Length: 169
Image 1 (tube, helix red, strand yellow):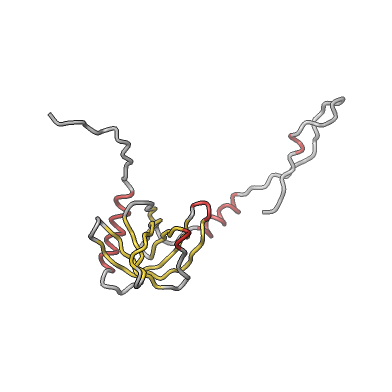
Image 2: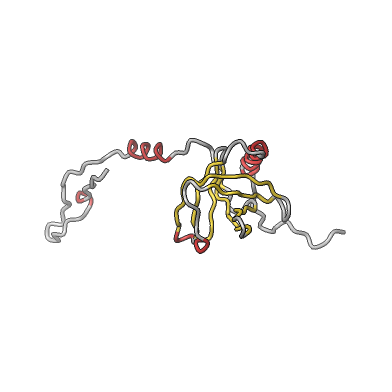
């Protein structure tokens, strides 16, 4: 990387009298190997499922209450979630209690350990990466919930409102 391709052989000469092409030799570099290296470095070791606005999630702030969190993705080992930029964020290593709500009043709790947090200014959020803390009472439920999310998200459709009826005869 860091090499510059010389494209002068494709440009028309500035000399309008001769109107010839410049014939400078150009090296062509294959970037396939560099691309594969970047992909390998960035590739996650676990399958994750993108969840934007799929289920309701909240972090539990002791003595303050619940703070809405937007689940971003989930895998067997952890999840990513967003908090509004104005709300702040958690520090790496911090243990946080979370709740996933299946309806307005039914939820299951679990605990995570934050591994990273970064502000994403253009989205107005602080994105957190976290690992599930194993050994809790909800390990089995959490595993099945993740499998449910993975299975359902593979076949989700968007409702554009085109199949509504006004009345039943």
